[in-house]
Amino acid sequence: MKSRAGESEFTVRSNEIDYRGQATMPALVGYMQEAAWENTANLGISMYDLLERGLTWVLQRMRVEMFRYPAHNDKITVETWASGRERVFLHRDFRIYNQARELLGQATSVWLVMDVVKRQLVSVPDFIMAVEVVPGSEPLPFAKGKLPQLQAVQHEQQIPVRWHDIDLNRHVTNTRYLQWALDTLPLDLLEQNQLQQLDIIFKSESILGDTVTSAAAPATEGENVYLHQLTSQATGKELVQAQTAWRKLES
Image (cartoon, rainbow, N blue to C red; front, top):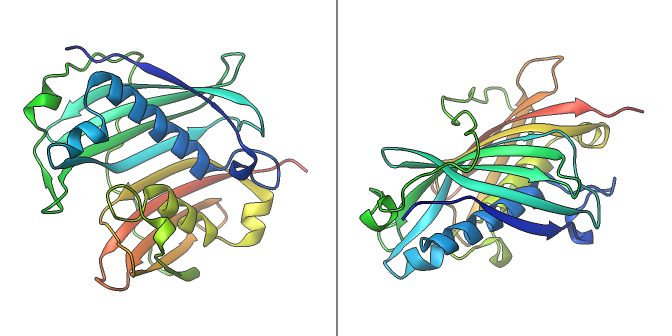
């Protein structure tokens, strides 16, 4: 069976916007994951299909670039397709369009397969490998390479993991990690700038009852680039590493 691109339509809802009336980055990442779910369901390799075999999808990395943000009540289309494979890494790309078919943003992502009982990553099973990758559009550059390590922490908060932070895999959902990373930034940065680029790596899972430390600091003084790190207080493991780039809003 050959893979094929999918398109999913969404309307930006009031609980998914910021004070400017525009969709938040966690909301946009949520749309992209929902579009990926629909596309994999049509290919017979959705999370539900994997769970029947004791497996599940795990998002390992996502790199997003936004050119313009949709506003409340805007109707958008998310196009997504399987863009390649490298050993155990499965790549998936996204493009976000408005109703006029103008490109608002794009993203590339890396996915792995996990055994839900052993909580260990596994080789890509044959029934997924049987779906031939046929990119629907020109693939974006794969998200590769290391991010700079956060050194001197300037902003930090402690976040307890609660019931509504947990997803179908019984660990903290990745959009919550993203929200926590962004919420740790100083208020003046969030009010006066808009997130232009995001590169986030999900390294380990956190579960109900844990407390997560979210830390951030500028990557280079004078530039609107920040480094982020989320760690588990229970295990000491690094959960998330990220880098964000911000664009100054016009006054």
